Amino acid sequence: MERGGSARLGGMKEIASAIGLELVHSIRGEGDLPSRFAVTDLAVASVGAVASSLARLIDVTGLASRQPAASVNRHLASLWFAQSVHPQGWELPPLWDAIAGVYEGKDGWIRLHTNLPHHRRAAVRALGVAEDRHAVEGAIRSWAVDDLEAAIAQAGGVSAAMRSMEAWAQHPQGRAVADEPLVAWREADGGSVRDWQGTLERPLAGLRVLDLTRVLAGPVATRTLAGFGADVLRVDPPDWDEPNVVPDITLGKRCCRLDLRSAEGVQTFKELLAGADVLVHGYRPGALDGLGLGEAERREIAPSLIDVSLDAYGWTGPWAGRRGFDSLVQMSCGIAHAGMAWAGRDVPTPLPVQALDHATGYLIAASVIRALTSAIEGKGIWNARLSLARTAALLMQYPQERPGELAKQPEDGDLSADMEETPWGPARRLKPPISIAGTPMRWDRPACELGSSAPGWP
Image 1 (tube, one colour):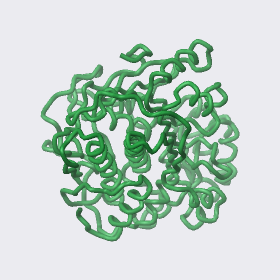
Image 2 (spheres, rainbow, N blue to C red; image 1 turned 180 degrees about the vertical axis):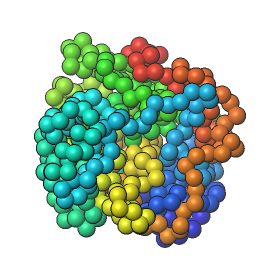
Image 3 (spheres, helix red, strand yellow; image 1 turned 90 degrees about the horizontal axis):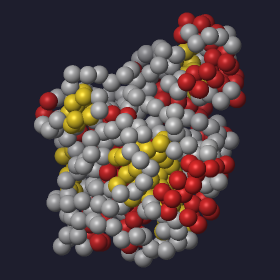
Image 4 (cartoon, one colour; image 1 turned 180 degrees about the horizontal axis):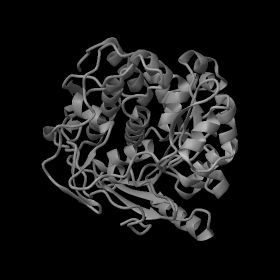
């Protein structure tokens, strides 16, 4: 394995320990995304955890005569942390709505996340203004940002005041997250995993993955599993949409809709769960319990289920139940503040990509594969929990040691020659960042619209 610098080595060691395996992949390529922190190192280490866990699974299941060689392309891993789909003759909708962004308050900066209509309504309700950016900007100037952050959370919205790394280290939630493991494992009572039709070429073929996640870490995880043959069924509410990322993250999946607020929807979900091998969900702690789908109920329905969950701000501490997204966690934990000083700017400066989402997504995928391997080895069924804030804590340990020159935009040679026919038009996809001998990373389905499939297993 390439050992290029202390940041790279340190991040890999902690990830290897968290996943519980030796990272056996090699690394090809050079370069770094420009950032205060070692973002490309994080990309390589988290993508590499998937490559190494798959190589281990192939070895344990005897799909190959020996553990296959695995490698990660450093440049492509960085690009996958940005956007994998590249439309040909059409455009993705804007990533942010008109209200989202950073604003200067009376005593600092705050970021509003208002892409979802109910979050936008909550923010303007807390501010007492109309849904107009100029009005929002004017109102925020009179607020202390910590007070506004609390008011928006109370109204059911999401925002984050900018804090320094030092302030986050002293914050009750920052202290709680620092004490959490990168991947929190817990053995579950249950039987052995169901047999599936894995082959060397498609080691996860036949593995049923129920995807109950939204933007962005969970969808990255399940897209990755689909790339090695898993049968992924994503479940969304009837009125949910995220048009600016759906073409990127539904690759390889089927997508259905269920109303889990209805008895009929819950019953259908229970039937899906009974036939699933893996559940990946991103609900806040306790949210599924309120739907009658708590951990005990899920385990009764599917005793051998591998259950992997994520949240934004960690699983302990006063903010464990707080809604959040990558861009908000970067503001809370000090990344945007440190980036501002590093870049010599006077506004919050986040990472060049949503690295917390993507890295956590790949770590979730690696955790699923590692849990699957443990079950095959007779070591029981294991569940795992991860969070964006804990991934941030890992990244902040490793400042960038190199200036960073990689661009987020791919060149023609970075894209597959094959055209992907999506519902929105033709697109080219980035070449895969992972290479495993005899096991190509590829997707059997193009990206699809939410709700385009029926809720059922084939």
